Length: 114
Length: 110
Image 1 (cartoon, rainbow over the protein chains, first blue to last red):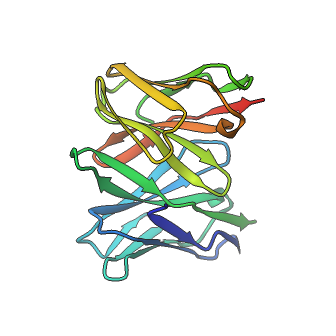
Image 2 (cartoon, each protein chain N blue to C red):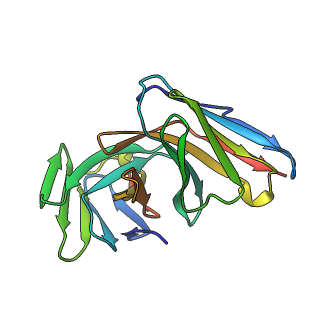
Protein backbone atom coordinates (compact mmCIF):
# COMPACT_ATOMS: atom_id res chain seq x y z
CA UNK A 1 0.00 0.00 0.00
CA UNK A 2 1.09 3.58 -0.54
CA UNK A 3 2.99 5.23 2.28
CA UNK A 4 2.15 8.73 1.18
CA UNK A 5 -1.19 9.94 -0.12
CA UNK A 6 -1.53 13.32 -1.80
CA UNK A 7 -4.61 15.48 -1.63
CA UNK A 8 -6.25 16.71 -3.77
CA UNK A 9 -5.80 14.33 -6.70
CA UNK A 10 -6.22 17.21 -9.11
CA UNK A 11 -6.07 20.98 -8.75
CA UNK A 12 -6.78 23.67 -11.31
CA UNK A 13 -5.91 27.31 -10.64
CA UNK A 14 -5.24 30.57 -12.46
CA UNK A 15 -1.79 31.95 -13.04
CA UNK A 16 -0.66 34.07 -10.13
CA UNK A 17 -2.66 32.15 -7.54
CA UNK A 18 -1.12 29.96 -4.88
CA UNK A 19 -1.36 26.17 -5.04
CA UNK A 20 -1.38 23.98 -1.95
CA UNK A 21 -0.99 20.23 -2.01
CA UNK A 22 -1.08 17.95 0.98
CA UNK A 23 0.52 14.62 1.76
CA UNK A 24 -0.28 12.19 4.56
CA UNK A 25 1.86 9.22 5.48
CA UNK A 26 1.58 6.25 7.78
CA UNK A 27 4.85 5.41 9.51
CA UNK A 28 7.67 7.31 11.16
CA UNK A 29 10.04 8.96 8.74
CA UNK A 30 13.55 10.35 8.59
CA UNK A 31 12.67 12.76 5.84
CA UNK A 32 9.96 13.55 3.33
CA UNK A 33 10.53 14.70 -0.21
CA UNK A 34 8.52 16.36 -2.95
CA UNK A 35 8.98 15.66 -6.65
CA UNK A 36 7.55 17.17 -9.82
CA UNK A 37 6.79 15.31 -13.02
CA UNK A 38 6.08 17.05 -16.26
CA UNK A 39 3.99 15.08 -18.72
CA UNK A 40 5.99 12.28 -20.32
CA UNK A 41 9.13 12.96 -18.32
CA UNK A 42 10.91 11.50 -15.31
CA UNK A 43 10.42 12.86 -11.80
CA UNK A 44 12.49 15.80 -10.67
CA UNK A 45 13.46 16.31 -7.04
CA UNK A 46 12.14 19.58 -5.60
CA UNK A 47 12.82 19.65 -1.90
CA UNK A 48 13.65 17.45 1.08
CA UNK A 49 12.50 18.20 4.61
CA UNK A 50 13.93 16.28 7.55
CA UNK A 51 11.84 14.96 10.40
CA UNK A 52 13.28 17.57 12.81
CA UNK A 53 12.34 20.46 10.51
CA UNK A 54 8.94 22.11 10.43
CA UNK A 55 9.23 24.34 7.42
CA UNK A 56 11.53 24.75 4.46
CA UNK A 57 11.66 27.18 1.56
CA UNK A 58 13.12 26.97 -1.90
CA UNK A 59 12.31 29.84 -4.24
CA UNK A 60 8.53 29.90 -4.67
CA UNK A 61 8.16 26.58 -2.86
CA UNK A 62 7.30 26.26 0.80
CA UNK A 63 7.08 22.86 2.47
CA UNK A 64 5.78 22.19 5.95
CA UNK A 65 5.98 19.01 7.96
CA UNK A 66 3.87 18.03 10.94
CA UNK A 67 5.18 14.74 12.29
CA UNK A 68 2.49 14.58 14.99
CA UNK A 69 -0.16 14.51 12.28
CA UNK A 70 2.01 12.59 9.82
CA UNK A 71 1.36 15.17 7.15
CA UNK A 72 3.17 17.59 4.89
CA UNK A 73 2.10 20.36 2.57
CA UNK A 74 3.66 21.89 -0.52
CA UNK A 75 2.79 25.49 -1.32
CA UNK A 76 3.67 27.00 -4.68
CA UNK A 77 3.28 30.76 -4.57
CA UNK A 78 2.51 33.01 -7.54
CA UNK A 79 2.00 30.04 -9.81
CA UNK A 80 2.94 30.07 -13.47
CA UNK A 81 1.73 28.04 -16.42
CA UNK A 82 5.10 26.26 -16.36
CA UNK A 83 4.23 24.86 -12.92
CA UNK A 84 1.64 22.63 -14.58
CA UNK A 85 2.76 19.13 -13.65
CA UNK A 86 2.09 16.27 -11.27
CA UNK A 87 3.54 16.57 -7.79
CA UNK A 88 4.45 13.61 -5.62
CA UNK A 89 5.47 13.23 -2.04
CA UNK A 90 7.82 10.44 -1.04
CA UNK A 91 9.09 9.06 2.23
CA UNK A 92 12.31 7.18 2.87
CA UNK A 93 12.04 3.73 4.34
CA UNK A 94 15.05 1.96 5.77
CA UNK A 95 15.02 -1.76 5.16
CA UNK A 96 16.19 -4.29 7.71
CA UNK A 97 19.36 -4.72 5.70
CA UNK A 98 20.11 -1.02 6.07
CA UNK A 99 19.39 -0.02 2.49
CA UNK A 100 16.98 2.76 1.66
CA UNK A 101 14.02 3.07 -0.60
CA UNK A 102 11.47 5.75 -1.36
CA UNK A 103 7.75 5.15 -1.28
CA UNK A 104 5.76 7.53 -3.46
CA UNK A 105 2.20 8.73 -3.23
CA UNK A 106 -0.10 8.76 -6.24
CA UNK A 107 0.41 12.43 -6.89
CA UNK A 108 -1.53 15.66 -7.34
CA UNK A 109 -2.06 16.83 -10.89
CA UNK A 110 -1.75 20.62 -10.95
CA UNK A 111 -3.00 22.66 -13.88
CA UNK A 112 -2.17 26.36 -13.97
CA UNK A 113 -4.30 28.21 -16.48
CA UNK A 114 -2.81 31.31 -18.16
CA UNK B 1 20.26 14.75 -14.17
CA UNK B 2 23.02 12.55 -12.64
CA UNK B 3 23.87 11.12 -16.05
CA UNK B 4 21.11 8.50 -16.18
CA UNK B 5 20.07 7.00 -19.48
CA UNK B 6 17.56 4.30 -20.26
CA UNK B 7 17.31 2.09 -23.30
CA UNK B 8 15.25 1.50 -25.21
CA UNK B 9 13.02 4.52 -24.80
CA UNK B 10 10.09 2.84 -26.48
CA UNK B 11 9.36 -0.81 -27.11
CA UNK B 12 6.44 -2.82 -28.39
CA UNK B 13 6.60 -6.54 -27.80
CA UNK B 14 4.34 -9.55 -27.89
CA UNK B 15 2.99 -11.49 -24.94
CA UNK B 16 5.35 -14.26 -23.90
CA UNK B 17 8.56 -12.72 -25.22
CA UNK B 18 11.47 -11.80 -22.97
CA UNK B 19 12.34 -8.14 -22.63
CA UNK B 20 15.34 -6.45 -21.04
CA UNK B 21 15.46 -2.79 -20.16
CA UNK B 22 18.77 -1.13 -19.40
CA UNK B 23 19.60 1.69 -17.03
CA UNK B 24 23.02 3.28 -17.22
CA UNK B 25 24.56 5.86 -14.88
CA UNK B 26 27.84 7.68 -15.15
CA UNK B 27 28.46 8.77 -11.55
CA UNK B 28 29.05 5.47 -9.69
CA UNK B 29 26.11 5.80 -7.33
CA UNK B 30 25.57 2.83 -5.08
CA UNK B 31 21.76 2.73 -5.08
CA UNK B 32 19.73 2.14 -8.22
CA UNK B 33 16.00 1.54 -8.58
CA UNK B 34 13.43 0.37 -11.09
CA UNK B 35 9.87 1.72 -10.90
CA UNK B 36 6.80 1.34 -13.00
CA UNK B 37 4.23 4.08 -13.37
CA UNK B 38 0.61 3.40 -14.21
CA UNK B 39 -2.44 5.66 -14.13
CA UNK B 40 -4.09 5.57 -10.73
CA UNK B 41 -1.13 3.85 -9.08
CA UNK B 42 1.59 6.43 -9.06
CA UNK B 43 5.15 5.16 -8.95
CA UNK B 44 5.69 1.64 -7.65
CA UNK B 45 9.04 0.08 -6.83
CA UNK B 46 9.88 -3.13 -8.71
CA UNK B 47 13.43 -3.90 -7.59
CA UNK B 48 16.37 -2.00 -6.28
CA UNK B 49 20.10 -2.49 -5.92
CA UNK B 50 22.46 -1.36 -3.17
CA UNK B 51 25.65 -2.50 -4.86
CA UNK B 52 27.11 -4.77 -7.50
CA UNK B 53 25.29 -8.11 -7.31
CA UNK B 54 23.22 -6.81 -4.35
CA UNK B 55 19.55 -6.50 -5.19
CA UNK B 56 16.24 -6.72 -3.39
CA UNK B 57 12.56 -6.82 -4.23
CA UNK B 58 10.16 -3.93 -4.16
CA UNK B 59 6.38 -3.99 -3.85
CA UNK B 60 5.61 -5.23 -7.40
CA UNK B 61 8.47 -7.60 -8.19
CA UNK B 62 6.49 -10.61 -9.49
CA UNK B 63 7.32 -11.30 -13.14
CA UNK B 64 10.51 -9.21 -13.04
CA UNK B 65 14.14 -9.97 -12.40
CA UNK B 66 17.16 -7.68 -12.21
CA UNK B 67 20.90 -7.89 -12.48
CA UNK B 68 23.73 -5.57 -11.64
CA UNK B 69 27.12 -6.87 -12.71
CA UNK B 70 28.69 -3.41 -12.93
CA UNK B 71 28.11 -0.30 -10.84
CA UNK B 72 26.94 1.69 -13.83
CA UNK B 73 24.36 -0.73 -15.25
CA UNK B 74 21.12 -2.03 -13.76
CA UNK B 75 19.09 -4.34 -15.98
CA UNK B 76 15.41 -5.13 -15.62
CA UNK B 77 14.17 -8.30 -17.31
CA UNK B 78 10.66 -9.44 -18.00
CA UNK B 79 11.16 -13.16 -18.54
CA UNK B 80 7.84 -13.62 -20.32
CA UNK B 81 6.05 -10.34 -20.92
CA UNK B 82 2.35 -10.05 -20.17
CA UNK B 83 -0.16 -7.35 -21.08
CA UNK B 84 -0.30 -6.29 -17.42
CA UNK B 85 3.33 -5.24 -17.73
CA UNK B 86 2.45 -2.55 -20.24
CA UNK B 87 3.67 0.54 -18.43
CA UNK B 88 6.22 3.30 -18.27
CA UNK B 89 9.39 2.16 -16.52
CA UNK B 90 11.69 4.56 -14.73
CA UNK B 91 15.15 3.98 -13.42
CA UNK B 92 16.56 6.11 -10.62
CA UNK B 93 19.69 6.56 -8.56
CA UNK B 94 19.92 7.82 -5.01
CA UNK B 95 22.23 10.58 -3.90
CA UNK B 96 22.03 11.64 -0.24
CA UNK B 97 18.45 10.31 0.03
CA UNK B 98 17.34 12.27 -3.05
CA UNK B 99 16.49 10.31 -6.14
CA UNK B 100 17.28 11.28 -9.71
CA UNK B 101 15.34 9.70 -12.50
CA UNK B 102 16.02 8.61 -16.01
CA UNK B 103 13.78 9.66 -18.91
CA UNK B 104 11.70 6.47 -18.82
CA UNK B 105 10.93 3.56 -21.13
CA UNK B 106 7.44 3.15 -22.52
CA UNK B 107 6.76 -0.57 -22.90
CA UNK B 108 3.70 -1.93 -24.67
CA UNK B 109 2.94 -5.64 -24.54
CA UNK B 110 0.44 -6.72 -27.16
